[in-house]
Image 1 (cartoon, each protein chain N blue to C red):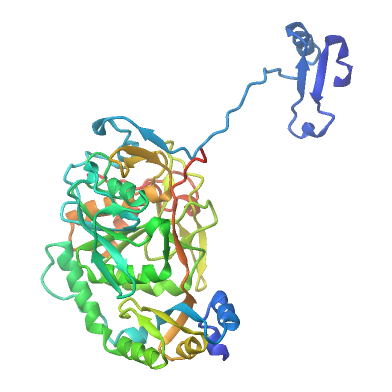
Image 2: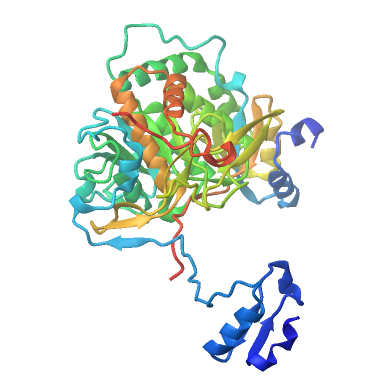
Length: 345
Length: 132
């Protein structure tokens, strides 16, 4: 029908007669406004709208902020605290940050109780100079105990450079796990690394860490749905994905249904804010990053607040408390687990 | 390699051992059978209420240590006798083992070894950054 448009000086770029009929949309070019009005009158069944540019949505933006520390965008804290955040919350609790190292910037000044490196040849974990091989560990530590951006500003972190420059190995993991197991100061283990897929062999290591009272909080990965990493996809740790400012599940969040030993269970366990999350970086400034790595330390901080209240709480009870406190965001359990972590304060 | 040994290996390790020359050194992670790490019984957490989390953890570590027994040490000795280089105490049920393919095959065959895997990279969950 639209091929007779020539009298109105309208050029049909794509009409319902071609494959665009799938969408019920025709794209036409009109020589001027009068041609467009004539077209609208003649084809009144069509709603005519002006073409407009659609910008690519860049959900992965990492933004630098020049805001002073007391005016940072801390939407992640607003979203998880039902009451007031205490400036000393998490006091007496230490979180092991198995990451790229930590640079002790002002935001976390005096809160890093140890910087450690792996010495593989003599199989020891030894104190080392403060420093981050990448920047990731510093951002993570800030979210745990930072003065302005941290969930538990009274907590401390012990840094272990397990993933120097972002690249580690299973042998690094085994050495770091021995150190965590034997270090009673470590109440919580925060980790944002893994091996793609489900690797059953390493699960025994994680079971042992659980036996000795270490709460493991592990990111599932940033590869999107129906993918995950070990050990974050084991049943023992709290597995974490990222939510957005709009309380949606960030598209990069990994997860799905795990089928193990004739049983199935969903990954993740819960969600925490993980998109546009502001924390400290190595030069002392602040940047907003996206990732399940950013959501994970927020849960570690929440766990520190719970343990501070009940130092002898059993891991099973602690995990249950954290999970039961979550608010349902309305997504499938394979995307949100129990929902968004909350703390009453 | 027998079928019982084969089930101790993941596919990548199976292929690596099959393709390795006799003098090529490989690094594997050996995982101990639970019985080979711990003695019988359950950890004893009895005692006064811990006042701090560190006290709680210390008690849990001690309880786990009391069950460790000497089995892990025996496993390490057995692997060393084969000529393997062994790193780790076995306290988390895993050992890092270097050796030739033939040595490693003999190690995997030990009763105390539950499974083995090639040492492999473990990557950071990189923050999702822009391309610009």
